[in-house]
Length: 266
Ligand SMILES: Nc1ncnc2c1ncn2[C@@H]1O[C@H](COP(=O)(O)OP(=O)(O)O)[C@@H](O)[C@H]1O
Ligand SMILES: [Mg+2]
Image (cartoon, rainbow, N blue to C red; front, side, top):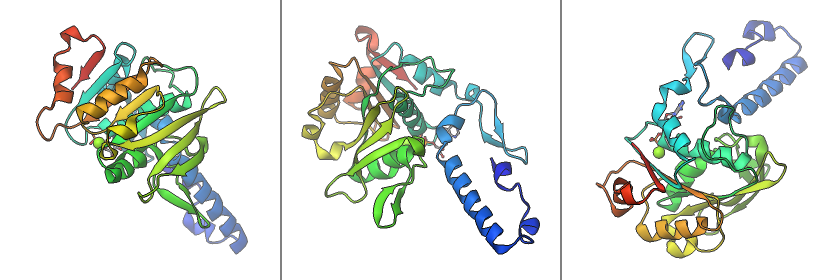
C-alpha cells in the first residue's frame, strides 16, 4: 500500500510551490484515511499482499485454514465456537464475518452462511470497557471528532464509507449503542454493542440475525441470545481463549453428538 502514498519523493515535493505542497499533503491524508478504512477488502486474499520492500503485508488465506473452516462451518451450524490461543486472530475472524453480514459484501471466495438482506446484529464482550476497546475498536476503529461532534474513525473492519447513523450508550464513555451500516441491497443493517456485565435482561428484546460473543459468556446470557435468533434463523459466533478452564458454555460444544446445530473449531 505504501507505494501509492509516496509516489512523489520528499525532495521533489519540497521544490514545489507551498500551496501545491499543502494540496498534495491533504490528498495524501485523504488517501491514507481511505486505505485505513478498507482493511476488510484486503484481508484473507488469494495470494500474499506484499509491501514494496517485498515483506508480506497481508498473508494469503490458505495460511489460515482454521479461520476458513470457521467461516465455512456457518453454512451448516447455527452456533459456532472458535476456541484458540491468544493472538491467533479470533477477534479478527469474528469481526470479519460480522462485517460481511452487515454489509452484504461477501468476498467472492465466501462459502459460509449468507444473508441476502440487511441484518440486525450484536457484537458483545464481557465488560463495557472490553466491548469498547476490543470488539467495538475491531469493527469501527477508535473514536474521532468532527469539530465537537463525536464520531467514529471508521478504520476498523467495517469500511468507513459504509457507516451511517451512530447512537451512544448512556453511562459508558465512548461506547456505541447502535451503528447503522450500509448494506449491498441498498438498505441499512443495524449493529448493537452489548456486554455481559449489563446482565441477561439487556439481551432481551429485538430479534437478531447474527450475534458475535468475543469472550466467554455466562450461560443465562447465552440462552437469551439463542432466543433472539430463533425467529430469524440467525447464527451465533463465539470466539475466545479459555483462560479459566472449560465452562458450561464451552462444554456444550464438546458434547455435540446430540446437538447437530453446534460447530466447534479449535
Ligand atoms: N487473517 C489475518 N491476516 C492478517 N493479520 C491478522 C489476521 N488475523 C489476525 N491478524 C492480526 O493478528 C493480531 C491478533 O489478532 P486478534 O484477532 O486480535 O487475535 P485474538 O483475538 O485471537 O487474540 C492482530 O494484530 C490482527 O490484526
Ligand atoms: Mg481477541
